[in-house]
Image 1 (cartoon, rainbow, N blue to C red):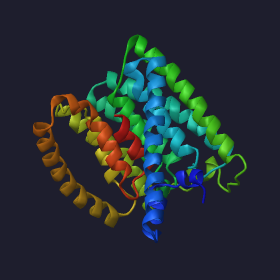
Image 2: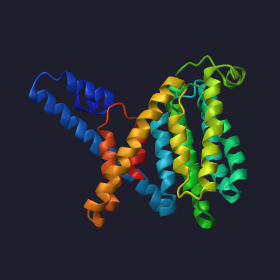
Image 3: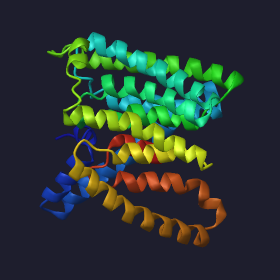
Image 4: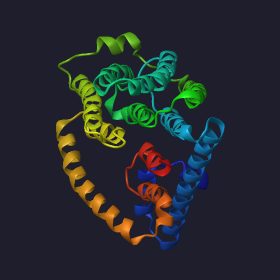
Length: 302
């Protein structure tokens, strides 16, 4: 395996190579490649988001995050149906993520919740047919990030342009990478396979309803950055109940530990380093086993 090929491995693949290393020299080499991969990923993410910030304004840097998330995910992931139809759906998803979060912010929390339910219904029913692709961690996350970092006036006009560019880039990369693949399903099949008794449809409905409801409750309670409550709900709602129970139990412990660590660091570290805590967190996430790239990027650039 060449240096470049090893750079293409995900975290699990890199960890596996480290485990199989038989000598100190071999292990040191794999560690070096792993560190280079993290450094390159960080540099690319910052460069990409910085370019979007320069082009469309600092208040629209979140657009760069969402576009990069979509590019990183959908260059490999698919929607499970004909490539041409999937490409059109991706374009529709970008329209929804551009318009609906902005409109929902103009309404009361309850009316905004209803609009969010309608928007997420399209994203999840047509974009998350295969739960094991974890497309909800891209589409719903992107929607909530744009909802939480809403803009108005000239900034929103620039956001429209930025999202249009992002849609074009994502659709181009997706179609180029998937055009030679054969899919048996089409859009009609997704509609026909909607079954209220199936575990997949139940999971989809739970995502569609619970995320906006949690978001609405957080807003009614005047929580700052209510979008994070929605993101927490989205990530905890899994297709299988036993997996959901396991994640919720672990998350409770993790949240308590996280609050304690943050409090300790807040009082121990000088204020000048606060701006770099997100970067350090992103690096830490990069070292975790089986951590999805989208979570790594979110920790890295937010």
